[in-house]
Image (tube, rainbow, N blue to C red):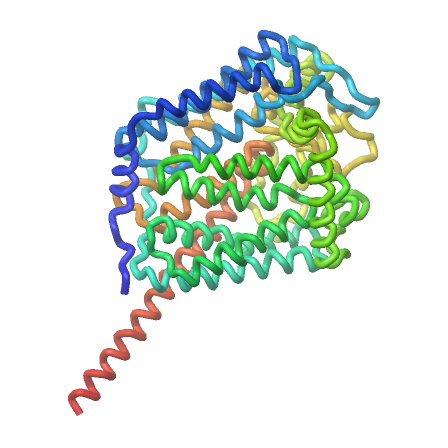
Length: 507
């Protein structure tokens, strides 16, 4: 029996204190910003260049500190990963979009420079406050009073086997989810067992990074299970279903290795450039009436064929058009700063501040719909799209991403961004400190990474992301005790066999 009851906190702390240097990091960042400012498709103003570049410098500066100046402070790899996502959402398109346009029900309109500048400034301030909230000076004093989750596993072989079984169950439930015709409410509960895939994947990847994963399991993990989950997710017409897997792997790698897998982002962005320009064609092939839920009527083989055909079309598109045009079109999906600028431009002049209305659903999030059938069920992104006339009045399916930063501003203006981002940083740190401590165990690390792999979706509303944490916590408890019971069962079998051998020898 191989033991896992090592001091995981000491392991993470040691790696946090072991890396130094990082001069090449700043050279690459300088080269990246130089290239963006000189050769990117767009021609932003000087103010836009400075503010967008400032977001990149701040985000990557914190990543440099986390990677090379950890000073033995053990934490999960969520913050640096989130900073990359944030900078892509709120800074990149300033350099890639030739015209800062926003669509509405009446057509497209050009955003005012003042609104874009204000959106960039508030994004930079918001990012700084998230970092301040995460590293605020009183965090260590507060951590002493937080609940500390101890989730120890001991038998490596049992953990590996049980995680593999859970991963198969999660993948099977994910397939069934898109093959059964259920109401949205029923789907929310049926989809829960599919979350076992993420928990198991994190466990097995940690074992691999620590050199403890069996060779056959490695082949099964990377040759079948993970590619199948990504392929099945993307073939539904939702690139985000595949990106969720990648983000969980990135956070896991960053946590254990104390570094960012930059090659994953480079390769991932290349794949994104291939698929994003033809995503609408893929959805038209498999969705019905612009609804993903209607895709259940389409066979998985047809979805797979449509996905492969779209991939080929995307590659042809890249070869046919100018690279700058391809980058501009592909990064339009990352243009959350433009939605933010639209809300700033029209609030409160045309649309009054929401006064916290979008957070209303948080009050009912922990109540199961079985107990409260009238529980509010709406998409904040659809409400946003109607409020700002981005879609037709009779369109109740299309959702424009209501990012958390935009939501802060839409509800309370600039003060909402300031207070909201500071609270976000504090919440992130609080969750981290509940799971990372001297007696945490491997299970606590897995649980923290899993929860953060959902919280990294800062592109969706607070109620949607934080409201689901209690259900995800339930899946963590089931998964953790499932492995603990497996360990107890296998241990009982070993003791019984040992007793039987002793009896045979005595006889």
